[in-house]
Each structure stands twice: as structure tokens, then as C-alpha cells.
Length: 173
Image 1 (cartoon, helix red, strand yellow):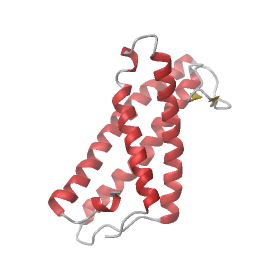
Image 2 (image 1 turned 90 degrees about the vertical axis):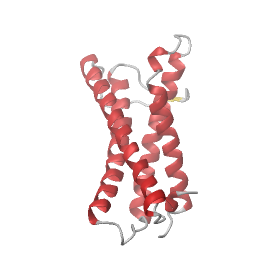
Image 3 (image 1 turned 30 degrees about the vertical axis):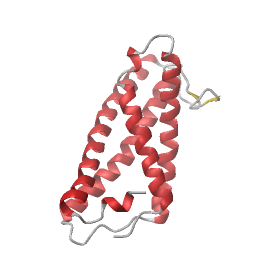
């Protein structure tokens, strides 16, 4: 089985590291001491916007460069499941970042990317009711992403440990 390009491998692991870190830390944002909470929330929003940018780059890159074919020995249902989980990860990671960004703007807390510049969304008005809806959606999407990440990791481990078919090796540095 062919490997992904070094750039795509690096991008995959960068996104994975940031997403897993963000999901882990996000459960404790409201429990942080008030003195550091604004900085933590600013960093959360900044990394969320960074994930959005990286996911768009990854989407374009994969569309142009393609990806290695899965082994011919894989059952059709397993190929369908693997590609479905990958596609869902793209959709829900982008949706999670977008819902957080929209929620922030709706609640009049426009993100300031790593404290450097504001990242507004033109045409999105301040609206507390809609902000709360997007907050709820953001949380639901986070749980969906957690489930998808677990499926993705389980599939990779199955290929490495049970199938020994080099699928996981195609994404290792």
C-alpha cells in the first residue's frame, strides 16, 4: 500500500493533536479560575479557527493529490465504513469550528485570533437566542467528533494489529 505524502501526514497529525487537545480541554473551560478563563477561551477560539483553516487546506490537498487506495483484500462494507468515517470527520470538524465561530459572533464575543486580530463574520448579527442554539449545536457536534475519532482510531488499530495490512502505516510519519 502506498503512503500519503509527507505533507498530508504532517497535516493529519497536526490536526489530530490540536483536535484531541481541544476536545480534552474544552470540558474544563468553565471550571478554570476566572483570572485565566478569558485567555483560555481566546486560545480555544483561536485553535478552533486554526482547525477550520487546516481542514480546508487538507480538503483541497486531498482532492488534488488523492489518497492511497485501500487494500483489495478489504471487504466492500469496510471500505464504505472507512471512507464514511473519514468524510464525516471532515464535515463535523468543519461544522464544529464554524458553529463555534458563529456562536461567538452571535454572542458579541467575536474571536481574536491568538490576541492578534479580530475575526468577524460579516452579516451575522448579535442574537443571544441564536447564540445559545449554536452553543448547543457546538456541544452536540463535539460529542459526534469524539465518536468519530474513536471509530477512526479503532479502525486504524484493527488494520495494524489484526489485519496487518499496512493501512495504518500509510499515515505514520
